[in-house]
Length: 105
Image (cartoon, rainbow, N blue to C red; front, side, top):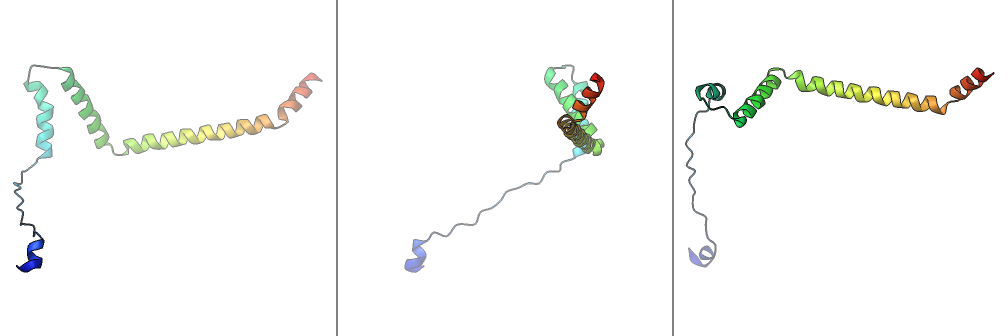
C-alpha cells in the first residue's frame, strides 16, 4: 500500500437493495373508483378526489381538450387586437369630423 496508498481512502463497494414491484394502473384506478362504494362513509375529501379524477379522466380521454381551449383563447385575443386597432384608426381619422359637419349643414 505504501505511503501514497495510505493517504487516500478508497471508497468501498455499495450494494443497491431494490426489490421490484409490479404496478397495475388499471387495477389501481378500478380500486380507487370502487373504494367509495365499498365504504359507507362519504366525506368531503373523497368527493373532491372523485371530482378531480373525473376531470383528469375526461381530459385524458380527449387529448384535444386543452388544444381546443388554447386555440379559442388565441382566436379571441386576435379578434380583440384587431378591433382595438380598427377603433384607434377610426378615432384618429377625420371621418367623424366630416360626418358631424355634414349633419350640421
